[in-house]
Length: 469
Ligand code: ADP
Image 1 (spheres, protein in one colour):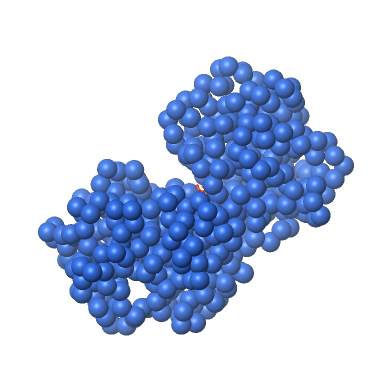
Image 2 (cartoon, protein in one colour):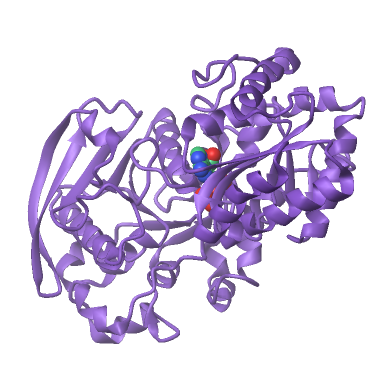
């Protein structure tokens, strides 16, 4: 099969969150299973672009509404990522450092998608499947099926994977003319609650829809930021496939970011060596159990609760643990977490920003990973934590439900709680401290490192789903 992935992120080219990790890994494993997988991304001006060699494979001209533009498709010459990587450049829109967050993101990603369809419409063969990820690529199934200009792509199967249904790419009907010509009576396929909703359109138009964990798929029928009824209606073609982790990138035995490499047989000494380095750098007491949080400061991750959680833990439980937080996002949460250092002084540090290397060091050096997420489609952090011998402390939702078993249950190893409230998180911390002092703790760390969340099985599930397979 020839599978074309279209996405806004792909690690290590451009990553903001889990979407990047998945699109950087899944195609690689599809290739290993004997298929041809390609990734198409906007040509942001990231470090990866400048550090690699590229060849131009296509130059085209098309339009978004009345605006005609030239686009260029380049390909990385060595395919070093394990698949062919293509970048689409559109002058004035995509030639920027950042991935998201610009006021013209609607125009940027709409033009990107139009250019993509325009490009593949000129191939002299048809791909087996076009696999689009999240709302930034979600207009593609509609355009391929219903645009008069691209009628010959109508029967190419499309698959949508939803990594996060909170963001849907809404745009007003005043932007309808951006889309390549289509029969006006098809407009209903784009519409959801009086706006053009790209994610909703792909849920209707794609041949199959997946989310990144089975539990999240279930939850979307009750909580999907307005799309609940649509998920209920389309449930027949929807399924959940748990993300894997890239076991080559995330391998404590070979990870070059770590102070010491280790495997499950050396988990105690290995983690201690990494913890020492981390504690030295952040002036934390290595003797205390270390809780870390890594993630975007947005409502879904519940990082806004952390200042109160830390304050309460110190107040009610005592100075028996330390906290290290890595992340960025909401400015108010950033400054709250940063200023907390001055208030609590000891046993707490926050690193505000994005730092891939530090994240690896934290997974390796921590004792516990906190994930109080309000919404968690899959969550990769908890799987990285497991692989690095760090016990996850998670809210029982979405992919966290599918990957973490509470240590009070049969064969359990982590800590789960029901609600994203300060009281429940504090209680979970208390239970984590109990586990830390329990004789089962060393064996649990050894065991979680051996849980297999690698991509092989998930990659097979995607292949089984593709229509013509
Ligand atoms: P989401 O995609 O919702 O952000 P995931 O758990 O699926 O959440 O993936 C998050 C990924 O982003 C993980 O690889 C995590 O380590 C990484 N990450 C998030 N914030 C940071 C940060 N500030 N620095 C380094 N890595 C981060």
